[in-house]
Length: 120
Image (cartoon, rainbow, N blue to C red):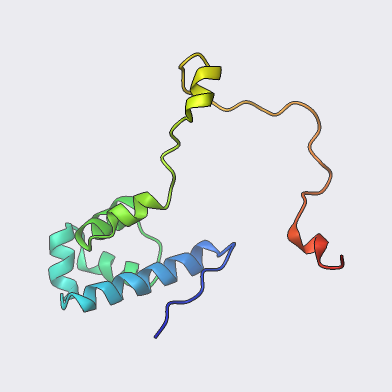
């Protein structure tokens, strides 16, 4: 069966459910019991069951589980490292940004979206 097509703006609940389902499938593909995986990850069996069912959990528990299941690197690759580009480094005198600033001027009244171009 093919993976579900990624959708934009998923709710946190929908993300938890999908992540739990995928983690459970990964565990089963490795032929590992919930008890054995919970012990290896250093989390409680009840916590693992809740994660697989899509219930809220601590980030630490999720990361422990992801690490044991071998998906931690994939998680890291989804978020860019934020390395400064060489031209930006030259413009900033070699320093990296430490904090964000408010933008000057007034923001646009309504943000632009692709939906506005549908009638064109």
